[in-house]
Length: 105
Length: 247
Image (tube, rainbow over all chains, first blue to last red; front, top):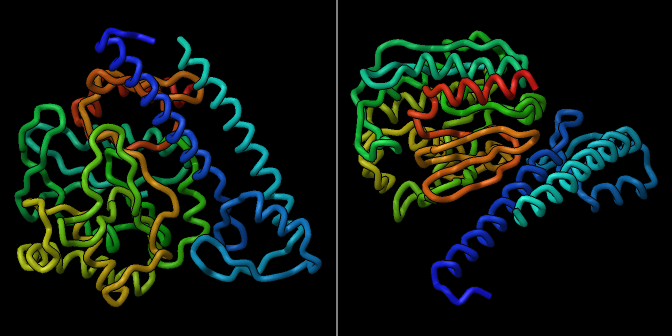
């Protein structure tokens, strides 16, 4: 723990910047998690994936991020959403690990 | 894609738009139209590099609706640099128009309102529109607000003293939706703006390394709104574009 006030300020700056960088990365991944499908725009998250995986009907109307009911084919959207989610989350993990590494330099 | 570039005595906006065009070609692979011409009003902007006010030719944005040769248009400020493909999702889903609503600033965070007792500012930096009657009405209103800006400036309690397209689009959107907000007209994610003088901005892999003032930031590679005109005409940006488009 630094006792010098200047060192302390420097350490706080580094910690603050890390939190800002982490948030910027989270925001970017959240943007990337949006998927355009059948004229609607969906934010892919675990709730949507679980819903699509368990709903019994093949076709249904689903609310998109613009509050519009969009007619979807469940399995088709689920396949695309899974692929999209996995890709974005893998990127997040890789970039997050890299951020943690940079912090220690 | 439509970009506006109206040169001033101090800034070559056409050169900036040409650079933005290279990134658009690489990331979005869409045709680009650059609109120039003479300004209808004289205006000034705050220069983030020098800290002084300078001439700014930002009028006439409303002609984008008429002059755009496309059925679907992404209208961008020439200082909005594309580094990802996310705007294509909006092309697939836009009904009438979409405007950026949230703006994350790296640097100073200005008030999100047009004035202390006013509406949240929309960002005309990114506007996506289809040629529909509602979109046409939006652009007609933007023209009307620009022509009568003093009136609307007082009516909406705007703090800044200069005309900004952000204000005109905010007011037009408010009027067109029955003096209300409709989330269907807004970009569902924030744009990212750097509103300070840039000492260094480089790209390594999927990250931007940014230095402003005495602070370093590591940002994910994404589209960014760069307000430092000095940086936008610099060799450093050319190198960044080379690195991004050859990666």
